[in-house]
Length: 455
Image 1 (tube, rainbow, N blue to C red):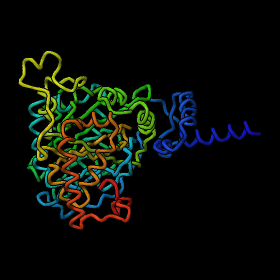
Image 2 (tube, rainbow, N blue to C red):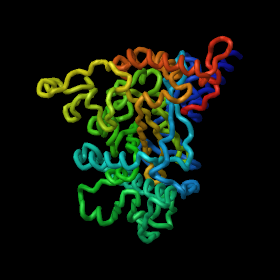
Image 3 (tube, helix red, strand yellow):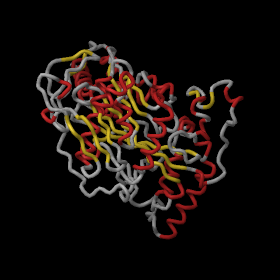
């Protein structure tokens, strides 16, 4: 009887593993998780269809789905001069540092977020697009359809969400010509997006004309990247079930380059980037999430870093010249440091030189091609401004002290911790003295358990 019960329990857990988001597996005992992994590896290389389809599909194959993006609420009084960046503060109280996917559902109205940093960020994106060409934007051969869908969806979202700032035109719909069909936001009968007018910058992009003028150099990701503030990465499933970075616009990454990661799998991107504990804590959950994500379930996540200069697009002080950088050493390639003025960065001696860098990322599966569009918006602030907010100095210091050694190295902690932590402790004590932070009878900060992540 007992062996039968054990088999039934394992079968139930495996069903959960196959049908629910993988972050829930963090709560499954390690020994049982290993059995689940073994069970899933033994399955045929077929995944369930997305949405309500009952047929199965092979890896790397996708049949376009009928999907209507939920109605978008127009932000009719949006003012690009006055709307402040959303104050994401995705650092948690210690003593433990969670290494998980950390995903949550994405509100449909908030896929692409704009604010009063728009003009400056788009100016950077334009300059880097002009200066760096296909080192800033690229679509791999064979993935033009995915890039076109990304551009179309972004254009339509901007026009619906920010109607005073953007407007689009469409080609006439022809039921016999799929290229004329509209996207999930406007609807198929609206026709494909033909052009977009950006009233903030004055730019007008007529895509039909641009396709003709640019010919083989036409790249939809170039224009998708010039319309908004996010970096963009298009992930496409290959015949082995792995997701590869096949198209993108990367202009403000700061510490990595498109040319090093384009064409790579999720595994290659994260291992070459030396992401801490990727193999043991993230790989399985991440790869399963990508395989199972549905078109009606976009997600978002946040992260944070620090740097010791104010360069949003590329931290040359930390990395050295961009075109001489080597991702394996995270500095100038071997031999090149001798022909540049670059010297290995030393720990900063000034609190005012430390900048807080946080990313808000979204992942959305697009219905026509099945690709996953990964958006990366970077918010960038001097730490000296951040710590004026009640409760931030103490929480930030506690979060930094919770980093495991490998995370501390990954986040370049040795470059700033010696000046950052003492000052955060001082400011935390000052906020307690002023009554901005309250302590309970045991000396713990009141309200720390009710804070809403990632704010």
